[in-house]
Amino acid sequence: MQDEQKKKLKLKVSAIKEGTVIDHIPAKNLFKVISILGLDSINNQITFGTNLESGKLGYKAIVKVSNKFFEDDEINKIALIAPHAKLNIIRDYEVVEKKVVEIPDSIQGIVKCFNPKCITNNERITTSFKVVEKEPISLKCRYCEKLTNSNQISMY
Amino acid sequence: MKKDLISITDFSKDEYLKIMKLAAEFEENPNQDLLKGKVIATLFFEPSTRTRLSFETAINRLGGKIIGFADPDSSSASKGETLHDTIKMVSNYADLIVMRHPLEGAARYAAEVSPVPVINAGDGANQHPTQTLLDMYSILKTQGSLDNLNIFLVGDLKYGRTVHSLLMAMSEFENPIFNFVAPPVLEMPDEYKIFLREKGIKYYEHSEFTDIISAADIIYMTRVQKERFSDPIEYEQVKNIYILRNSMLEKTRPNVKILHPLPRVNEIHTDVDTSEKAYYFTQARNGVFTREAIISHIMNLK
Ligand SMILES: [Zn+2]
Image (tube, rainbow over all chains, first blue to last red; front, side, top):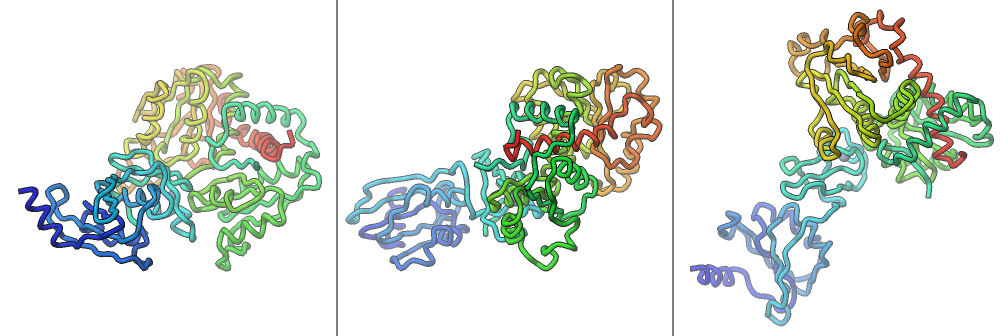
């Protein structure tokens, strides 16, 4: 049954020769992932599928980026919104490496501070947080020193 | 590398002790020309006469010159200039910036932008570290030590930045005991209780303000503000409970001192003012010596 599902998935999103496949993205966060990784402003060939059935996530999305190999700190930026994302590194149509994303110890930009009185919400400043808790996530603002918790996280 | 003072935790215990020692020296001898030839900017994006006068007195006693503004209406910020640009401009002129700002995190940001040192004189509800250092100096002066003290924090413990900073700083010393006295809606936030538990420091919580204070070495009063309550009935119920009266001091320890960051409204009855245990006006005076000490330390003059 699982093999059959995998086969179906393969049919839905075409294979790539060289590059990275990002799997297990929650479907609702697909476009945020695309924007955080800057995939909307590069010239590489990109295919994606979304609203694919997945036991774990309900509905998931998958992105295939040709000729693109992410650095760890680049890809870890999506950990906040796609904590279970899995990366397959493809060389000559073969998966040569698998990676998972990890929540980094600090986060620059991406997330807004929850505190409306924070200077970062009133002047053009890149936010900066220390990750004080990873599960559930809790972020401490470098500026106002207030916590932004998982249910309060919103992105730029 | 330049030194800034943005949050009380920016300083180590050794630095706290150095500030205390210098403050005592300045109390002995307040007029010292250490800032001769220096220009200090006092930028008050939010008015605070008390804090500004204390800083400006400290700067004058050190022989420095002052530039700046006392309220946002007379600053370029009122013309829509960003904090970034104001700080960039002022740091061309001054050797040190003292700033107060209504937004939280403004001081940390200014310190990043500015090549000259920044002292935070209050950033919204976030931090006011020079207040904490003057509180500590007042405690040291009256108790002879910062170790083994039973400290009662009374009133608004939820939003009161001064009590949070004092708790963090006093936790660096030997064997403190904290007693929190607050209405349930304004009790000490969990993050501070977790912090104390992790450090193995004892604390007790009370919603009654009665003869429990007989064990206190320090009673630190804060104001319970009406605006903090979403339910006005709830405020009416507690507003008279957290008022300190002279009669309540009868059974307290002879060494106990009452502190308050000022301004007070009604949380300390005026009949306490003549008590030997009242210390809040002297506490404010200590602010000048403490700020002389902080400026000297930040600018490597002592
Ligand atoms: Zn913030």
